[in-house]
Image 1 (cartoon, rainbow, N blue to C red):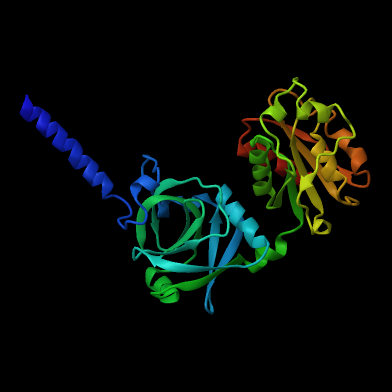
Image 2 (image 1 turned 90 degrees about the horizontal axis):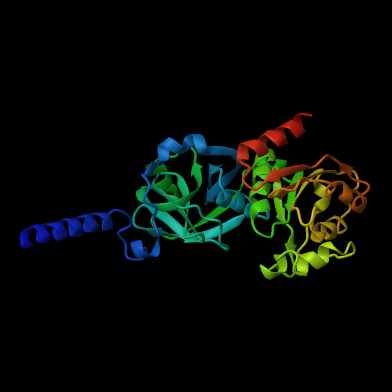
Length: 336
C-alpha cells in the first residue's frame, strides 16, 4: 500500500516538473505570474487565415523598414489607434535569445492564449509589453501582428544583439485611408463597446469612446431608484459632460454613433456629443444595444440635435449579437 502511494506521489511530481519546464525558463517571467490557459498550443503557421484586413504597420530599425499585418483582435485595433496619433518609437532589449521586448506607453486589451510564437511574430505580453520574436517560444501571449516575409537570420541581422530602437507606424497606404469614417460610442457596461468594435472592423474606421467626465457607477445605473440615469433621462435638458474631444472632426464624412437604450432613448451624453460638433453635410448612422427594447424613437429624436447632418435609419442589436451579423448590416448599408 505504501509503495503504491509512493509511486502515485512520484508520478504527480514528475508531471508537475515537466509542466514547469514548458515555457519561459528565464526567472523574470515565472509561470506564477501568468495564468496560462490549458488549451492546445496554437501553431503560428496555422493562424494566417486569422489575419484581418485591418491597417498594416511598418516596423523600422535604423534604415530598414519591415511591413507587418495586424491580427483581428481588440489589442491590435487599439495598437493601430495609438499609431494613428503618430509614430511610436520604443527601446527594446533582448530576452531569452528569442525576442526583443520592451514596455508600451499604455495597457491594451489582452486575449492571451498559449501559442508557439515564431520568427516575425509581434506579440503582447501582460497587456503592456511588446515583443518581436526572432526565434521561437511557447508561452501565453496576445497576437498583435506578423512581419511579412522575413527569416530568422534576416531579422537577427536587423535587430542586432544589443538594445535597439524600433519605430512602429501605420503603413503609408493605410495612413492615407484613415480618417474618413468614425465610430463614436458610449458604453457604460461594455456591451455597446463590443458592437462598436465590430462596426469599426467592418468598415475600417477610427474609433472614439464618448467618455463621461464623471463615470457612471453601478448605483448610477440602478434604474427606477431615482438614480443618476433615471434623473438624466427624465430631463431633456440634461447634458452630462464628456471627458476629451475630437480635434479633427472635420475630416470625417461618415459617423456611426453607438449607444445603449436607457428608458427607451439614447443616454443624454449622446446629446452632449451631438451638440459639441458641426455635423453639417456628414452622414450619421445610429446604432444601439438593448436587452429587449427596440430602437424606437431613440434615433429620430437625435435628428434635431444635428439638423444639417444626413441621418440614416438606425439599427438595434441584442446584447449577444455576433460579429457576422454586424458585418452583414454594415455591408448592406455601404452597398445601398
